[in-house]
Amino acid sequence: MKKEKLVLFLQRVALVTAGQAAAIADEFSYLALEKNDFLLQAGQVSDSYLFLDAGLLRAFTYDTAGHDVTTGFYGSGEVVIEVASFFQRTPSQEYFQALTACTGWRISFTQLNALFHARPEFREFGRAILVRGFAALKTRMLATITEPAAARYEHLVRASPELVQHAPLKHIASYLGITDTSLSRIRKTLAQ
Amino acid sequence: MKKEKLVLFLQRVALVTAGQAAAIADEFSYLALEKNDFLLQAGQVSDSYLFLDAGLLRAFTYDTAGHDVTTGFYGSGEVVIEVASFFQRTPSQEYFQALTACTGWRISFTQLNALFHARPEFREFGRAILVRGFAALKTRMLATITEPAAARYEHLVRASPELVQHAPLKHIASYLGITDTSLSRIRKTLAQ
DNA sequence: CGCCCTTCTTGGCATTTGGCAAGAAATACG
DNA sequence: CGTATTTCTTGCCAAATGCCAAGAAGGGCG
Image (tube, rainbow over all chains, first blue to last red; front, side, top):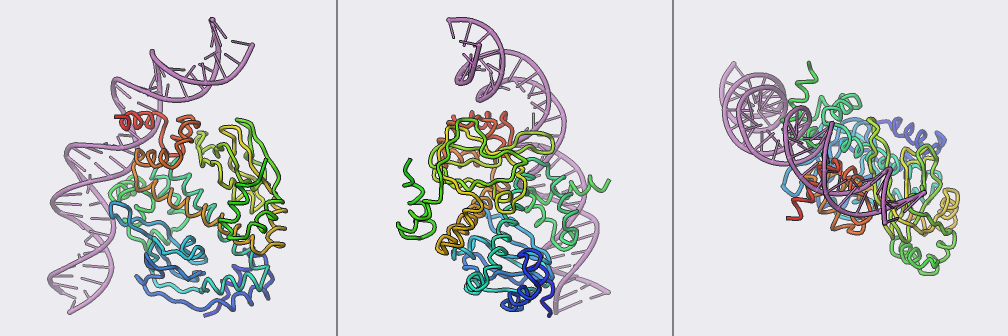
């Protein structure tokens, strides 16, 4: 139940001292999810800014045709937030569900803003998380429109092999923008 | 050469008073681009946080196969930034080029941070722009993996009809993730 | 252990989209 | 005005992916 990972992460991303990081981390409280628990449900206003210590989460929504579509995966060492809902205080369109048992550290919207106010050095962290997420999404977007599904799958496997172990194929497929049937065939050809 | 649009935009997004907005807008300086001028070239570190008053811009990059891929379009009343390059002070992967003559108001990274420091009420604006951009990109990502190209094109036409007037078909096509040939056929069927 | 339900694979066929190439139309520019 | 260049359309065929359905494999639980 130590906040070591969080403290190190804060130091690295916000470029703050160990002491500052420890003080900031103090505001975060422990959160645990069991497999299949929801961190957030559609319709709710998110109030969780979560640093994931261990475990895997999946974000998903339903498209206009009612299909379950995976919008993101989150692994250990990542910040899990539904940006629009959390910062704009609007109902979420997405569900966030634990793929495996998860543990992490969370703060609320109010706490986060209080920290930004009290600790100017922490503001850089808040911005950096948004900027990183933005850049990652742009990279994913570019890959989606320029690379074939097989290549996108290979990248995913290389980037997060644990994910492929724990997430059912249909969730990975919808994340990649293809059907589970296609992904199954892609796997087959890659295996050869 | 009046900053009216910018002032109104600041008031609406940052929820500041007219006086505060005018003071903030004071820091922005006039910028004009002729058609085909570049606001930013790949390899440069962006130092432009631009509010576009009039005109159209296109952002693009080259994929691994060397194809020109449109990553975004920007119209009047929008904030034009290469988020990763501007905030992380890293070389841009993208080009930003004027599709038509453009006018707008820009500030530098240093100025922006000075404003955040001097005017706490402006911080909300900075965050809101990032959050909006993030949410918009997520929506686009979801549409890309769930909707057929024809539907994505129709949405684009409805959302920005002027864009379709000024951007060549191949740029729109690569933005949608299809070839110009396919888009031409899609247009044909939609016309009937 | 055995059943049930979810997950994964596979086959057959339809649809979408791409690659290539040619020609028509529009636009830029001397 | 006329030529050159770019843009857009179209035809033909190939490749990628989707849809439907059936069966195999795997995991959870009484």
